[in-house]
Image (cartoon, rainbow, N blue to C red; front, side, top):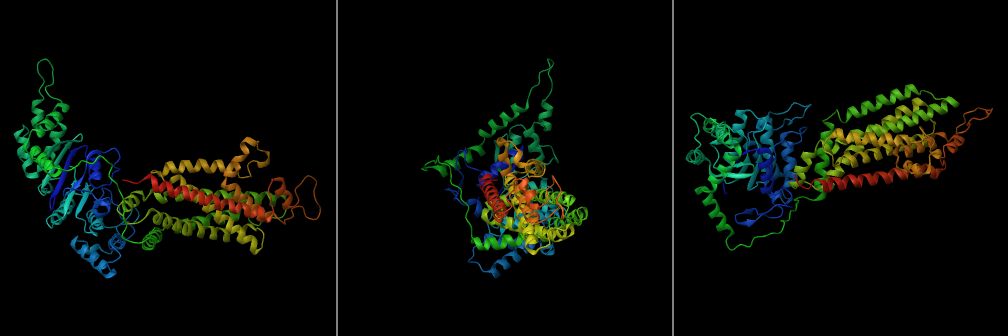
Length: 576
């Protein structure tokens, strides 16, 4: 296939050829597949997917970065460490020039909220991300999707120039116009997964004419082929004449069978079969499932540094996910502080303290729902980069975790504590304030970890949100405010140990109520006059160990949920 462009046209292109491309590119799970994929007569190396380029149908570049920054990221992680930084930079600049991206090299690619480069420039950027490693074979899944006719033509002309310089280009395409179709060297037509033509693209019209399907003058050959496959071409329509008895003379299934049989009796089928026999002659057919491995050209530390840098850059350039979170947190802190402003040391103060602490705890849990998008929104990008050998799963997981924990959990917890704590008038000691801040942060960490564990294998944010909302509402019931925990029947009481708000609220209660008096100098009969009495009534161990065991429980739950999230991310999506 040296310097040959192969195009695939098909009926049902999205479900058939895309899987076929995945198989050829070693990006489909080989379990259950029969046959072998050979390269120059030799089996594919186990890491073939890391050596070849694969441009997926959807854009998989970071929209908040510039074209140059995306190319630098690909070069830093996919090129060997033996290549100097200057050589990598020269390669990036040369690629920008070759792809015609000089004018937009320092422009952001663009997101839904950030205006970026044009569709054709985005597609060339996606192609450039794969050309960084100079792959001998480049696969493209419908590269003209979403592009206008002129832009699609320019992208295919670029691919044609690359194929003329010794690179194999294999792509699927849906109804290209004639100026694109005539660029193909080799053409494959499929119908319902069966091959009906494979040979020179420019000989396809003559082949179909010889078997009874003639293309009308000025008709686009690509449209004509799809019409024949679908049974909608003019030559077929004229044959669909109802006889006197109402019998229809042809059917779509008959047409498909006819096309398959005609091809198997053609010279192109014979030539292809002869070539395959020469390749497989004296070769022992392997029935074993081929092994698939992912190799990396850079160390863990290099990957961690570049992915962490990109993750934080993406957060900074996405103010709706970073600064907005802090802004909303401060706003809620002001609201809570105004509602419970200046609590007193009386019975109303006891009730207000409980209400404030309960709201703060549950607010931290429900605020963590935003982390559900952490893996879902970038799932396609992550899967593509992981399979292509950019970085390890552990690197991606740690970078996303650190960026979320630091910017979206720790900083909001600090701001919230500084505003709400003093407005409400909680215990005015340094130790109590920092224990309050620590508890609020721990609740946020644990709730975030649980959210990650639930959403790691989900593909729709709404479904993940439903699961998390149900879980948090259930936990809220057993937090210790809505129901007296010691009074719950034994066979339901164990649910309280799974409640994140319970551990957070209990720690905050111990931190706040120990040492407080609510009756003044004259105790009232039937009332709880000290914080210790109230905690004892709630069945809470208010000793120092009682406080810290809740922190330990939150930390253990955080580690467990993070481990679940990592393993779900690691083993759920091995292949595209």
